[in-house]
Length: 162
Image 1 (cartoon, rainbow, N blue to C red):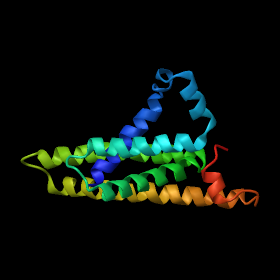
Image 2: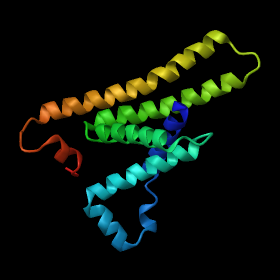
Image 3: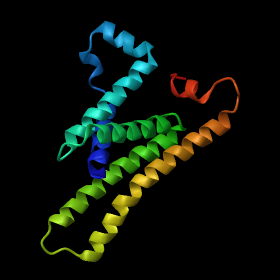
Image 4: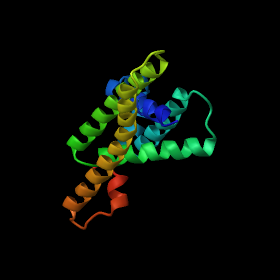
């Protein structure tokens, strides 16, 4: 079940890296999106919600899907509000996790597989999502700790562009 979520995150990351959809929007829509950070976050959440559902092998219960999408969205926001290198590490781990999960599926489909190799990759595919969450949260907390200027609340920091 978590494979679908990480694959959805990989597709979301690919969409952002491509950045090709901006030119297809009208100038009025681009203006609204560029001036309103909350609209940007809403678009990211909707992309997360629909890309994860797109990659699912079977339909999830709506509440479970909403919770999973929200968790991934929060991890994304925490990582982009951290230092840039934290975001790069998290993106790299998402890509690595996608590669490892693909290899686990490949090993799973083999008739004669090396059980030791399979268990190692399976363990790694379970460890990486926890690492992604831990690094995102730790990076965000470190960023908040180093900001300590007292002028902005955490909610204000999360919901504004700067």
